[in-house]
Length: 192
Image (tube, rainbow, N blue to C red; front, side, top):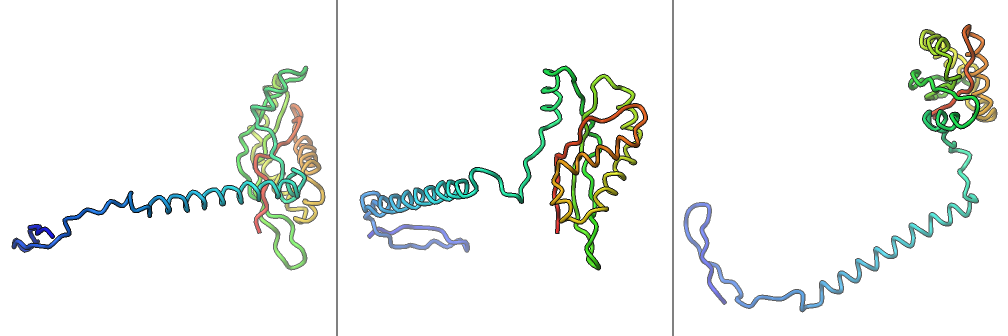
């Protein structure tokens, strides 16, 4: 045993006995066995994660559930793919995120819906772009009114493509200088 001198907070010196033999924990084997156990646990967790993912994909046939939607292409993707075809389009993305409430059932209130629409239109049509920008509030009102006229269940049964066509038709009815080609949704989520 060795005596170690140390100073306490009050300024006095004290002595403490310490075992002079140092213990080498690496030679003990306890760290080696702990490492093996941790590696085993990590491998088991990895197998469970990969296996669970594989089972979930196999169960759904690799397809997304009906609760999830396939995202629309981004405006850049639509514009760049249209450049390869005869009719190039531009994207009007200034509407941002719109919150609408669907029609309720009976005495119940409707469901909150958040949607981020954007439109494609012929790329050379500058007048149509200016008209879209001037009628932005009217376009938002049309979209909110469209969703307010249906219940959540009706919208779900209609399908997203039919909803987009309905909104496109209603907006094109209000346009004077041109017509939008398509409606796309960046976000399309129901909140209960």
